Structures are given as structure tokens and as C-alpha cells.
Image (cartoon, rainbow, N blue to C red; front, side, top):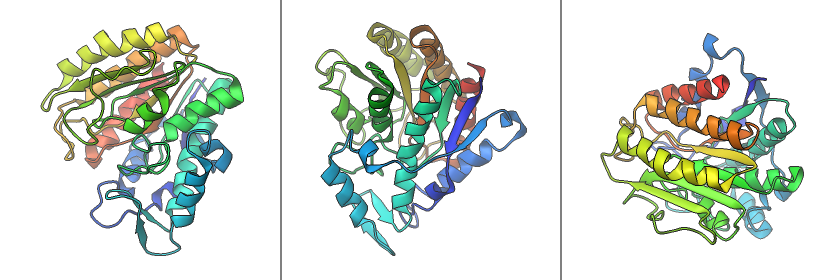
Length: 309
């Protein structure tokens, strides 16, 4: 079976403004990197709009409606200090959430072996009723809820290797023993969450904070000694990846020193875990990554590893 790529040009129309790091150029860099002969075997699919019902499995309906109503017909509106929406943001946000739901459907029904969602805005900082950190809706959490509601999968796991802690995903998962969230991230750094002692209601939260300047050795040790064993013990029905590429040594927004090869390695480890634990069921979605060249290269390596699984 093939790996699926879910994306949509609407995701390019979310415009936080000139100079904002979470720019449309990010997605253009990813799509360009995947538009080569090495990726001709990708099953390229159109990301649909998510419904309010799908998003409301993880966000209060009133919040969803309020956010969508605040998106302007022209100009820009600031949802928080870092999260700015434009006239194209509604379709982009709905496509980003819809992509992961459609990817779940395709993977669980066996149409494809795994999937990558090349979408924006990202999602892992969005808390139940708070947009933050460039994020409006929590795409990966919405995907997990969709897997549960529509396919009866109960134990869902998210592994997040973005340089910033996925505070929104943790907030949504921490009180449900059948939802697992594990994260490597730089600490201290925005958003200031993700301490190693944060364990959730049933040891279902695993944080492995890394110090500024840490690189491959510390990352691979954290994955091998903390995250992968905990993921194996959790025994998920499906694995999701919050795939942020901003821990790369060239990224301007943080201070970790991951190499290109770290992203191949991490993806290989997670696809092996999926093969061993849940029939290979795995869906990944784009989070951060702000050096365009490194982002494109590392996203391509990530997808290449998915295809080889």
C-alpha cells in the first residue's frame, strides 16, 4: 500500500502578515520538496473541510463558532499575541483539521498504509478554548477524536517532536487514561509547559525536555529510553505524529541542534512501533519548522521514511 499526502491550496491563504514566521512560504517549501521524482508513488489527496461536529469533539462548540465568526472578510484579526487570522484563515483551518480526519479514514479502512498531512495553520498549541502559538484548532487531537468516534479505536497516542511543547494536546489528553501524549521539546522555551514531572492521570503524559544546544545524542536517548518504551507500554490502537521540524540546528526560533538524519531516524522508530503495536496505523501532521530549506528537506525525509515503512 501507498503513503497518502493530504493537502490543499487553501492552506496557503492563511496569512498572518508580513514578517510572521508561520508564513505560507512554509507550506510551499514542503510541497516543493515533495514534488520530485522520489515521491511519484505518493497517493496525493485533497484535504476536505472539517465539520464543526468533527472539531467540536475536542473544542467546545461555542469556541469553534466564535473563532470562525471572528475571521475577517478582509484585513487581519489578532486572536492572541502570536495568532493572527486573515480572510483565508477559515478555509485553511477547516482544511487542516479535515485533512487529518480524512487521513484517519484512509488509514483505518486500509486504503493507504499511513499518511502525512501537509497543512497549516499548525495545531498543537491550541487548547480546548484558547487559540495560541500560531494555532487555531488542535488538528492532531481532532484526528485522534475522529479515530475514536468513527472507527471505535479507543487508545490513541500522539508523539510530538516539535521544538515547542504541545501544551494544547497535553491539556486535551491528560485526564483521559486512553489518550497518550509524549513530547521532546526545548525547555525552557515557549509555552513554558512540558516538565518531566507532568504525568497525566494515568502516566499517559510523557515529557522529555531537552536543554538548549542539545542535539542528536540527547534526542535519540530521550526517544529510546523514555518515549518509545512508554509508547510500547501504552499499547495504542493508532499512532499520530505532531511533526514539527523546528528543533533543527538551522531553525531561527529555538536552540536545539537536530540534524536532518534525526527526522528520518525518529520516523523510522515510530513506524516500527506502529507496525508492532497497531497494524501500522499511523498519521502525521505538520506542526512547526521555520527555516525553509531545512523544513523542506526534513519533511521530505519524514515522508520518505513513511513510504519505506
